[in-house]
Image (cartoon, rainbow over all chains, first blue to last red; front, top):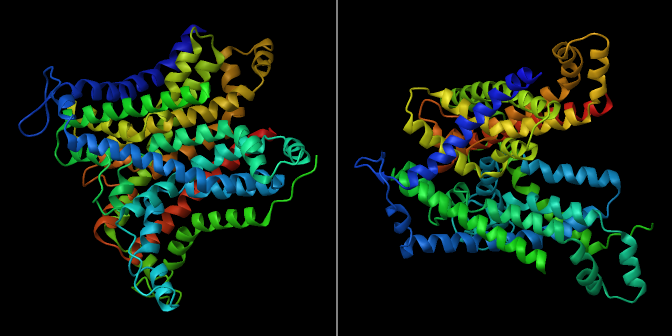
Length: 275
Length: 261
């Protein structure tokens, strides 16, 4: 019996050790090595890569990444809340269909999703040509390759991660609580502020964590929607690995980013718990 | 319990959000059938861009690479995940939550980190492997998801079925192969399809690990998006969109079916 257990568990455990733990461990090891003359790695213990990060240039990128992630999270909440609440009040069948409709873009490749917007918003794309011909706009709306487009790309990509947890917790709210509040002459705003919002908190927290944590790791959205003009942490890491070939610095950046995200999430969850 | 009737404003806002979600995708798909070379005008229905796409040898090579990597990584990850799920669910483990976390963790680690890790791995231990690098990377990427799918099914299976078989004289291995494995089949197949879908969808690991000979479909699309926008990209994106949807739908159907067994 124990032989069967070993035979079954050894291959997957070995696999995860070699092709999962080892690659992640290498990031830590390489971050404290030095860069070779022609890229590559010189194995020596040095913390140069970490110290290099405290250049205002790189600190600025980190600050910008955090700001963009926070702003996208807020936008996702604002955009996701009404539809989640609406979904929660539909019939069973309606809810199932809506969950499917929210999941479809989630299962669409990130590049296809971004290209859809690049195509729609391009200066000669369907949106601009339609708006110009119908007289809605005088000059084409040049939003692609700007900051706004980067934000749009993030919000669009992350919206399902906000809607689904939000919907899940809104759906559980006992509707008689709302009726009770109304019977006590609460206004719609009061019902929302005092009943719905507090009860939706688990979904709000889960959605925010998912959205916030995944944005700094993305380099494709700023690259494509922003036309490579607005670098975030993900772009910095990608450049260090694939363009500059400074792997130790890239590894240090990766670890710093993981630590910052982790610390941010911990802080947020702590505060949510005590609040 | 009385259901509150959704107010008009709320329904309107929700429909607007749905339009926001679907307008770009729909316009991308519709214009992939446009006869004109220019995005601005609709000049008539045509399959021109699909024909041109099929004639593009770079695109065919990328598709072939994606299918090879998807199929191979799907087989490997499903086999490993099934072993891991059965071992963890059917045998006693000390500190079981820790081992479960070990299997689950690759889902939590951002894909960019995995991609970076694999780039380092294949450079610290260099080997001429081409597509094999992608297969190794994607196998790790798929593994936790397939493991979760198979484990969910195992948890639902009544362990008494296996015990009954053993009471009737079957060895433990025989009971496993004759009873548990056939009952697991839908989850295994569903997991394998899901793995294929995840591999086909992956951009980050492929982008960091592939070289010019092992370009996958998403990496190829990325190069097109940066340098060469044409309606052919619409056709290619639509094709990838449809392929992902079919795979995921089939995977869900298989998992749904198991509920009735």
